Image (cartoon, rainbow, N blue to C red; front, side):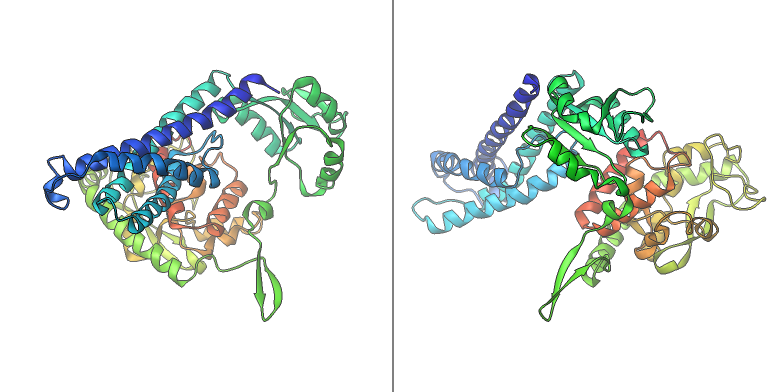
Length: 471
């Protein structure tokens, strides 16, 4: 066992517990000050004689262990590795809310001290802010340790397909994930497809290599026909402290969420269902209207400037209208700021490329930062699109891909979107595999939630400025 890795596994959760405890205690202090002593006190319930602060501090000390217990039960003190800070934020909001509700329940039954409900309202906000900031700092600290090679988990890969190569190279490059790739295992000794990568032997040698190399985790990347090897692998590793993680290698595993539903006493396995019920569609539509209207208002100066640039730098219309296909095969005209010359498709529909010579003088910049997509918020207001969803495609390309890309038409089960789960994971442009994009789209469809949409929107803003695949 890697001693440094063990220390990090202990230190990071302990620091997180300490950070949360300080955040809650500090939130009690700032909430008390805001309600009773700050210049805002008269607006937060009126100026009154402040009760002894010790009553709130004592209450904080009593309930902090309860908060830690709640967070621990929800597994908030595990090593997070590459967690996105806004994922952490939504989790913090959820369980801080439970903690504050619990606190207010206690003061309802305890009448011997004049606790203020306004203080607990302020506590909810300040707890969320302080805890999120504390966790953000610790996430940065943890990733910094990994980037320096401290606390990395010795990891091997079992598999030799395209996904195994991708995982191998990604974890070698991204040390902040917390893994140190020591090599890979193949099905047989005479097979060695991952050129330039450290071959550790066949899977039958896994037990001896685990002990020799101090391997703590094995990432299993097997095609469906090889899954029978898992049982033998488990037998080979009996009595050895090792963690196995199986990476899905085909679309059924990455997208399906099997559910059991009982009808009149008979259990049925639901292998496919409508992705959103009526209520979810209503919530998503309301969010789209409010968010797109707000976005159009705040970006109106930018859109006016872009309109002038498009008109003055090239001949042709301001907007480019292109027929696309959305939910249930419904067609609509998608709006974009024109980034191509007016005769760009005189030879017929074609995909864009990195060094495309059809761009207008500012077209490539518009595409790189996705600024040409801004008018699509008008499509969202109209109801043709959603802010988040699979990117819409033209019928011409759909007809050429639906028979060669597995489950391609599944994308049309929801409204198409301005941005999507595939795009924020870097799957843009002609250099990314279409099958992988479809898998990400279907994962989004099967796992939709409003929080998921918000997460994608936040990541999209970051992707606009740092994506290397946009063009």
